[in-house]
Image 1: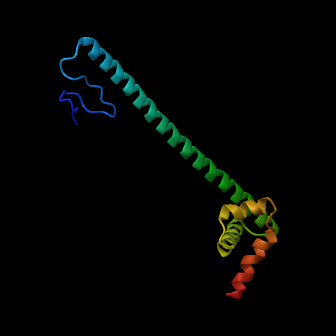
Image 2 (image 1 turned 90 degrees about the vertical axis):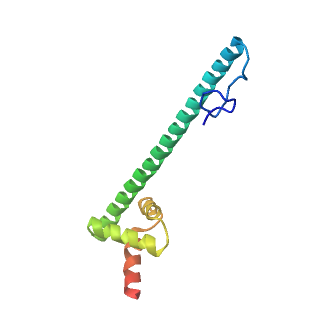
Image 3 (image 1 turned 135 degrees about the vertical axis):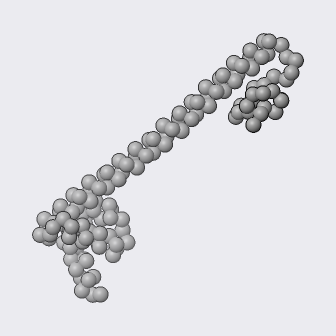
Length: 131
């Protein structure tokens, strides 16, 4: 889109055109103002990019932490219940689903001993025998 003053420049977020007939000093000031506006725009775009990258990094770190806790809980359940890792995961997942909790929350509670491993191991078995 062209500038509203009718010059051949493209319209940007900050328009710095001088009306026709202004002197050279005014034109120089306009060019400087446009250059500063361009630098500010670049800075804003870079900040957005950094913010997005930071958000993605945080999300990936949370996912990694969650995965680690789930693996630890599987180990606890496998050892306590004499299960293979797949069966331990199925028990953990079954307990989380049956109690409408996030898998990572149940896993953290098992690892930190706020939830007894036996409750997870027995909870699914007793619910299966009821159904």
